Length: 192
Image 1 (tube, rainbow, N blue to C red):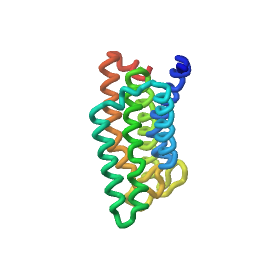
Image 2 (image 1 turned 120 degrees about the horizontal axis):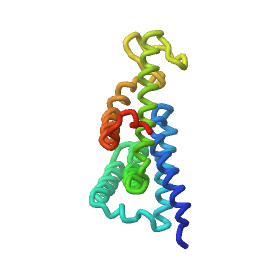
Image 3 (image 1 turned 90 degrees about the vertical axis):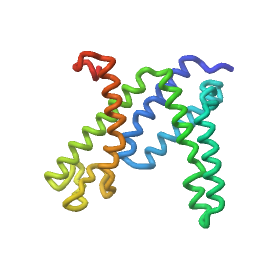
Image 4 (image 1 turned 135 degrees about the vertical axis):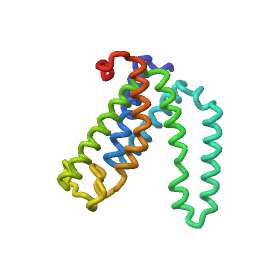
């Protein structure tokens, strides 16, 4: 049985939303982020089960990645603490599947990059504004105090990863800004 075209479009839209929410989910917590990554992989597997997107698995880089994952699992079995090591490596392949899903959606959903850009822009704006509030008033908008007088953590609470988060996602945000800037000559229309 062939999958319904409208059903496929709905799943692609849901996958696009899940991917766009990952930057926000990283602020909320690792469990929420894992939920979105695993859900994205499972929905992509469902599409693959319906014979959609199977061609992406034949990519040379993905095959090398899977070989690397197998090597990691094999290395974990030789570790002193096998269970702890396997916990980190056994499901590492999910990042490769996630990348294939992102590639799949980029070719089919022209709004994916816009959703991701808006999500990143909201996260950056909120974190930077909240960071300044926390720095100036010694508490952020949710009442988290400064970890110490030198470290601002914003919504991350006791995890001091605000700078790491911003520095890792800034190139993506800047790249998307330049991409949309090239498409739209009128700067006022950038967000519409």
